[in-house]
Length: 308
Figure (cartoon, rainbow, N blue to C red):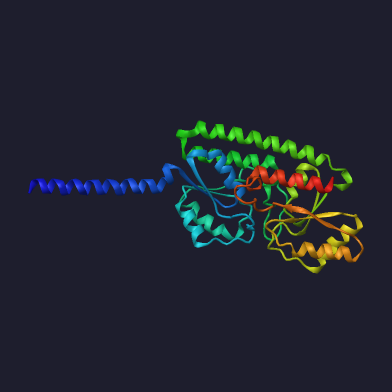
């Protein structure tokens, strides 16, 4: 009887230990990695580059998704619940998710990556947003976001501090090279041709950083309505200034910008679509445009090739 009792106790202990190990494994993510959930791909990509092998990086919003209009699904809520840390842009970009972030802040680190950018350099917003949230288009400002991500990962995992710092240094070096490349390329466009017309006003920081005038048919947020007056005013601007090319965006429907092109054509002025730019979302996973560095470089090359 004693042998049977000891055997039973042993089995119970093994089961308890197995359950405990399983629970620990779930908390830490696959293979003990830190689970990080980000809202937009431009954040998730930086997390993946800095976190490397110690981080499991998930982005809620996929290619072609507009963060201004995005509403979290139950699957998204589950990913946020399971995360060890959450990164989001802030500045009202993910306006429909603000209540969720407020709740999550009480449970785990929930961090706006733009928190260290001085309000003195932020552009004015619209539609209930105090500031323009599209900071990733000034690469210098997105370096600040990378530094926030680095520091938050270190705070969560001090043991691998040197690893995160080294990855961040390498990635920030690439960002600085991209910033210099953008300035050099945009400067090659004749000054009178440096006018960027897009579907919505997402490129304000880009224009300011790289010396090009920017006009958007729609406001900073795609929640704003496009009226016939907006279409006619932009059409007249294209005709009067002899603008030859406008650009569509991967996350914004093309219908309204096509209406502007047709309007200009009816007035005897031909305007072409210069190409597709990535504004509020990156390209497909596995492509160069599916990375932050690649999407910015694609935009620069597309703009230069059509305006130069």
